[in-house]
Image (tube, rainbow, N blue to C red; front, side, top):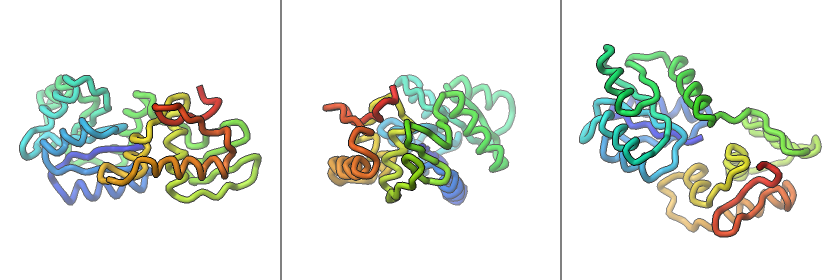
Length: 220
């Protein structure tokens, strides 16, 4: 899953990004308000972690602009401020939750998971599709009980289809989640990895939805 951290304290932002990467997230970081708003509006994220006091544009305004644009991404606001008024202002701006610094990392992870569950964005660690078993925690795939060896990128492409089972996933969405916003190469790279997955997992597993993207077969 992909997350954006908008936080001007670079040491904190780096620490959070490292920890969340270990938790299995793909993490982008922004250190000021305008850049954070740009990333949030042009990227595809499962959650935005948003500091209140930011250079150029505060977190309340970023949150309000995202909601005004009907962007439904879950927003967790972080702030050194405390008090009911500050929390109310963040929630009124459209935030889904609010955490005051300093905070426990365990509490942060619990809040993130709760937000993702509330949005229906949490997918089971082990997913079964027919005789195919994908263990997202162990990053292991088996078919009919036999291990299937995938490269790291192949697994990540497959995982994007798994977390959106039943839906169509575009090449752009796969690139943004598996590579990142900075990737400037050919979008047809996704076709290479999908072809490799079809060779290893069976030609009928991944359907091509012409002009739209890909979908896991039998996952409607």
